[in-house]
Length: 313
Image (cartoon, rainbow, N blue to C red):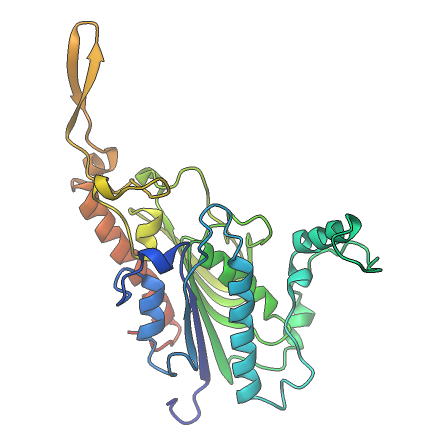
């Protein structure tokens, strides 16, 4: 229970792509799961909700249903807690925040996939304005919405914050290496958030070099971002160190390499230095570096939350 006079809390965490497969049953390799679990106020499933990330590894097409479910959960809790203040107030919908979704619907109608007289012109996505913020029916003294997300879960959390803009400003957004890689969600700019902390993978580790981060522009009262020597998965709590466990879509940046590797030349096989540059720089094996960086990334998010009064262990 919340102490008398303190604000209510609504906590939502969205994990990274494929987390239903790689997350351990106890959640010990998921920083998002543990953050939601370790939040001190509210019952899990009532005021605190954890969502596994999308299953679609390439395009993340099931990100939208997760986003909608999380939005509905928060809206329902606000309706229960503040029925009078919520009367007539609604969050933004997908077509309000994302022009790509609107364009897709128009194309579907134009190609005859649906029978409709829909003729509305293309809409520019709604952006959060000072006027919108000033007219929100709820404030952070009444209820604090906390969002955390890893990988595509960070993208979902960023878009979710924007969709809540007609109702309430999100109090805290914790991002564990937020990435896009979803063709119809725009999460480049964080809006409608008071405090933002973004833990990002250090490029020198060489993890997931074929995609970059999203949620890198911030319209917030306060934000911090920091790079950590671990993989993309390591920032979220899970990384691979055993070469035999690296599958087609897995990240081998934290796999321990032999100190030397053979190179065939005309004169025969020559053994050359194979030590990871990060290992040379930091003086530790890459698996230890990744483990330390993973723990530091989680600590960065948690300390940021505690810095602004959130009761998370």
